[in-house]
Length: 386
Image (cartoon, rainbow, N blue to C red):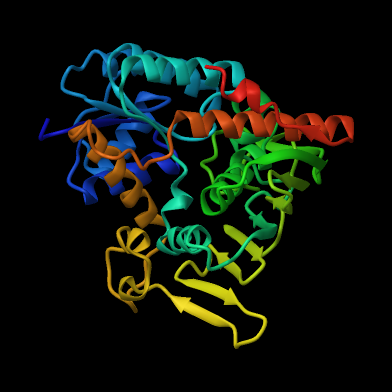
């Protein structure tokens, strides 16, 4: 297969990000489908996409489409991914892979049985300096790991008038901040360290138990509006979470997740402490990796392929001094995904459905811990039983 054609499901914030990244690597975007024909037509005109499918079933019936990118609300991920795989389409699915681990386990098994490329969109892995941090842990520079800690902070739901479909459990699931952004932090840490979380202790807070829902739809990161009619709605999901982590091998960790931290637009920050060095990285300063020492001055590595590990340099498209950021992570992830489609014998480097399943299992344990106010072990035997 020399030409691969994609279709994108979802026309909100993240669907157009997928489309832009696909075009940057030369993939043809054959069409889109949205929650309504009107929304899809507006986005298609804005993005220059020629075909608008009437519905998801029409997309699946299009034999010219090889792969489906699913960026719809969470509750649609399982049925749409299942149907796409059954139709013989490769899939890239936004997280969470499904609403619960029973569904994700089925999708892992289905993906394995079909042999199709099945990727979960954990794009944060694909910042060049995240790969660099992973390489430094793997080559022993950091030493044995003792502590892993950090946060993922946003402010787009700071006000009680801020609204998005993610606030409604029937669309997003029983957790919000942890499932939406905490999952990215947990996957990123797993990727960098290779450590497995064995147990969690979580505390949730709903800062705004009542929010004002506007009469119309609101796109992600655009907030609410005081100019439209609203209805008071009770909120059941967390705005803020604190999570203690126990890792295999003895390392300890902590994670703070918030969507109500004023001034923090989209900040994933992590620090890894080892016996020899520490590493720290901040997604709002993605081209810098802090390297901490005991007996010599600390360092700050500015992204430069000529100074980085070859595995990290592979996903840096530009030379030192030329910044790379959020949109580039999607491009680099899709390069690995589409390389596996074009050459089934290629090394599969992308995050797959097993990674998506693991994060849902971990999320369920975090949710159980927050409800029961106790440590909860991660049922990894169940994770591995497909």
